[in-house]
Length: 436
Image 1 (cartoon, rainbow, N blue to C red):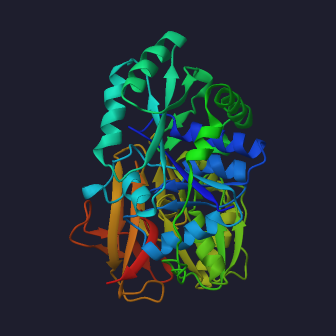
Image 2 (image 1 turned 30 degrees about the vertical axis):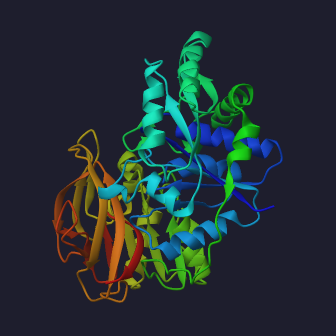
């Protein structure tokens, strides 16, 4: 049987996509189906939920930032050997950059993937029929197979909405009752990571039971579709060159790592190893490059500042001319210091003339398209790099040679990051690259 695909989307952020997607995957796996998952757009957090269930890569599919060849190959890999792939959309169905280029709708249209809508019914009843009808008719090229109503307060509440939806020939596949136990906790960058939620498995199992009781699972499976044939292409190389042996920081402070980046490095034959700065670990001594990804270092400033083994080993790597690259939180740690939310300042690695503050907060959010601002072996001056910026920390001091120069169509700054010999980084999470 050909592998099936289905996308879970909604009218807006916060409608319950993540918990529904996770519980649906859990239920299907409990029934004996092999399942993989994906996420539309630039998101590190939501994939932690489905990855913890499937124990497989959860690739991000980004029609703004990724070359089509990259998405094609990731889809092929994700569908390999599974019965169904469940993909979680980003924000609302049509939300994204100009002309909906980065939207869930744009992605599902390119691959003709059916969409199941999760609709938040809080403080509404029959009006939801108008909202659903508008979503369904707004773009006929988006194949919406039905709706699931979330946060239903009573049987009477569901009956009112269901009656109106059926009058308008809208397929109601079920509902989820209002239950405070089925809401994931949030913080400044969105949901908590799955492994940081106490009793996460119990919460998912509870949500799975609710779906079993209230959702027509067989109908969902009957309406999912196999992808049209995708011709595999040469896999695009990772945007950053860190040599043959790459040591990657990974723990609660450094957790924002795209699965597609690791997959690309592995396909290039790179040797990958992990270490935890929070646990005072060192990168492998024989590594050629070190990657400090984004995450939440601003929440662990004091501990990182006091982890002498980690700091000493990083300074040894600097002296040995290892390539050290940091993104967002990793970039902050490569600076002189970080100021936490209490306005306390803690020394960091001191590789770059950079001071950042989580006390003075300002949201920086958006896609970035940049070119290398320096001729160096790590970045190709003939390539355009795509990425995403999402942080609340602000720059107090940033002095030296910038790593990237923004293209004209970018929002935000004109230059990003710093480079100092073998040390380089920025607040941009790199996603892909293409020729100018």
